[in-house]
Length: 188
Image (cartoon, rainbow, N blue to C red; front, top):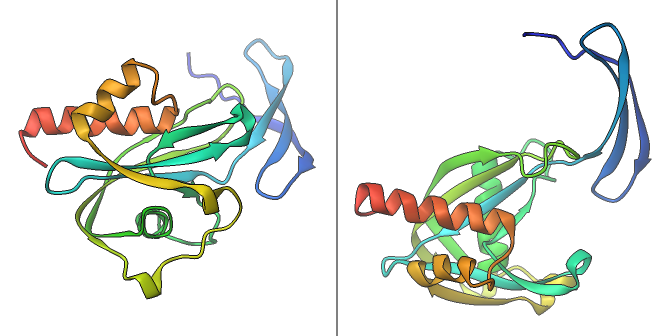
C-alpha cells in the first residue's frame, strides 16, 4: 500500500518557549480523516565524545519531568536558526562538557517518539578532543549550572545501561552505537 496521508488542516493549538502542540486532520485509507495531535519539536543533537583512552563524556543533569538527575551524553536543541547540525553538536559539547573536538562525524538520525512527536535527533561522534580554555567556557544557567561531568570508560558506560544507572534514551542509543562501531572497526 502507498496511501498518501495528506494533511487537510493543521493548527498550532499551543505554543511555548521551545515546543508547540499541533493538531492535524489527516486523510486516511478508505476515504475518512483522523485527527492527530503531536508535540512540534525543533530537533536535537547528541554528542558521543570519545577520548584516546576510550572514555566517553557523560554529564549528570537534573531533568524536571522525571524529577531526577540523569547521566547523559552532551546534547541540545536545534534552536539556532540555520545552524548546521555538526556545528550545533560542537557548540553543545563545548557548552556542556567544556570540550572541543577536531573531528565530528554523523553517526545516525532517529525519531525517539514518532507516535507523539516530530522530534528528530542527530547523533554525532566527536574525536581528537581538547579542553575549552577556562576564559572561553560557557556560563551555565538554570539546570545546567548544576551539571557535573564524568569521563566513563566506554564499556563501563554500556554496562551502566543494563544495571539501570543510564536511562536516557538518546544516551543509550549513542553509547550502544559507539560500542558497536568500535567492535566492528576495532578502533575509532
